[in-house]
Length: 397
Image (cartoon, rainbow, N blue to C red; front, side, top):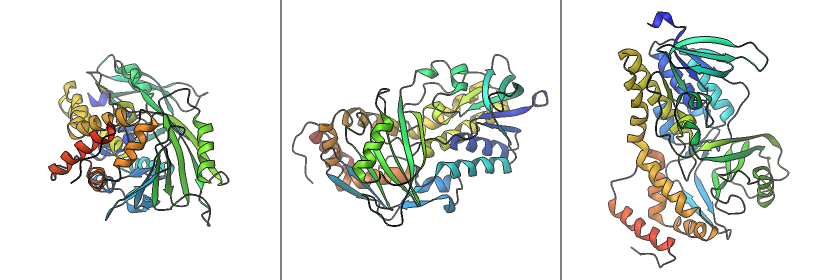
């Protein structure tokens, strides 16, 4: 069956998820095509946990900065510093980071093609995929046994092949990459991530300033389609004293905050990354989860290629949700309650002063799982959470 197709697998989308899937499958000996559009960089704060470097064999040289703390800013401008402790938050630039991942997949044996996927015919056992290398180029057609759609929140593959894939609620993110001057003359620290929970900067999400070494990411997100992202970013740069910092580039894109209920078409197509909706609610963290979903989808496709049983494709979502579904559920509840208005945001930032909250937050971030070894800390946080939510006096230890 494999000799009847041009490829065993075509991965559509060369971001962290697609490039990871392509690399894994190529390393396993499969004939892989990695199809990716040229010139697009996703708006992203660029934060990655140390576990990502270990799990996906990423060199330290790709980190452009090490953040040692996060500063949370309330509507009242109250600031809470959350030191990481002995660890760090790694920062990457998506242009160089994504390109390194694509190059690694190619070095592992994947055939890299620059182009845009136009149509996926998944009606038969063999998938026919059509693409153009640029807008005016003729349509080209290739065949494959399976497709992984890792082509973003508005995935063309998902829309064509996965039922209800276009009904996922998104946050619309925008950021500007700016040069950091030699002499810092603004409210900025080179080893600190700033997160603004202020309604005038985002009515339902947050804004950020993240260090990237010689550059910084200044951005924000909102699910309100009418919210003026660019104008608000300009106001934010004025608020932080970064108006005159040189702008390197500007980027915007939708970011999903809820995993799709189904990732495969039951035959030969599975989605991953933003196309599958695996960006963490509340935090908006996506790189680690995208790469994890890419690996889970690659494993599911490998099982399908080996067995010929399309039920194997279900393993992608099943594996991901087993590992991270509970965290996503909790973060979704947090976003629903705490991002409603500035009064609740103020209480949320106040809660972030608590040592238990800070310790468990960083441990969960670093390890990518809920911390179970200190159950009483969770109990204390639960009651403090209720106290802050309803404006009551918090329970003391």
